[in-house]
Length: 419
Length: 114
Figure (cartoon, rainbow over the protein chains, first blue to last red):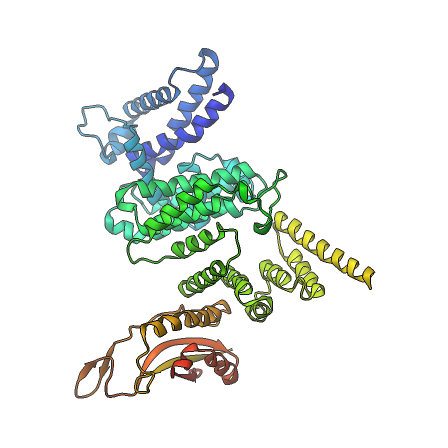
């Protein structure tokens, strides 16, 4: 690996590993100390490696330096004597040196414990996501700000407030017990789902960044599956859902980062290996009698990996959307159900149902109506697309809507000339 | 907008009283589509709940388990929808696919607390 890319790469993967292990060791009250020690370690690497060259095993070097810095810190600082030493989990004997365990197993355990701490409902979902990106995924303030389309200061404030909340609530960083897993897994999955969606549906045009968000969400979800106690059907369903969506990553944007609609996607670009992996997770999710919204959404996503428009496909999707709505109403599910209905019962039947939804502040409502009216009544279709265009904030959607309007207007001109 | 109780009573005594498993299976999908449509229109006042088909019947003399040999009808579904008036609520109730199987749907408007 090139020297220029080695450090950023290591930073991305190792920063979070060492931070997790140290946080796990110190507890939530001393989270900043953990971050400072790891930042110091990377600063030392930047300075030394540029002069002396990169060591043979850069990761081992980072771990060794982080361990030494931590030990020195603990020795030197009275904090250790007075407060931290009482809280440290693995201080077998006070006279012995604290062991900083950077084994693969302890890194995984620490990250799992951190996931459950960070996804605590005492913080709002967007704060949980920012914190997860920062501490669990090693994203910097600027990157998080880019993903959320806001500025760095807002993100720093959000992250600091979220940390304070965790401290105030004195949330422990520990392996969740079976009872806690049942209680809190739902919030954890919700955060991971939002993290993935942030990447997948983000209005940001930065494709590599969006892809990173998705792959981080998938990595954290895999971590839950690798752990026996958290390997639940719902987690498998969520990972299946992510795999199915992610399989279309290559096909869904062009070189300029503009969205390519599902119908127009080049199917050969769909990632077949990911679809197969997703199918395997979906099968594993079917064990047990639990049926969550992730199961249903994964089912819907599975059918979308089958490009061919069969009657079975859309009947299944419609039925899955019905079940999804029965579990939980959402405007998006209502709109998507109506789209599925247009495929099974025809556009006219779908228009009647769509117009009863009355989601008149939702741009997707009008773009759905625009799609349903296309070819049946192009005049109305254009009106609906134009309303959608006024309501949407997404640059990608604006481009798509403008193209639709353009296309319909051209058909109209052609028709007029024929007359 | 008013709130209306929609109560589906299954007919236990008529000749269609015990549908075959195939008929039961066939009725699930239209029912799901009907409920799905109502929820999509955001008509339901609270999330949809399924109710145990058995249940208990309490009388002064005794408590008995369902299904109820001595009564003609049993409650099959119960939920509350939003509608402008009785006409609209009845229109909603008419869509219930279980009507085909001899069910009756009772519609009651919630009164405003005095």
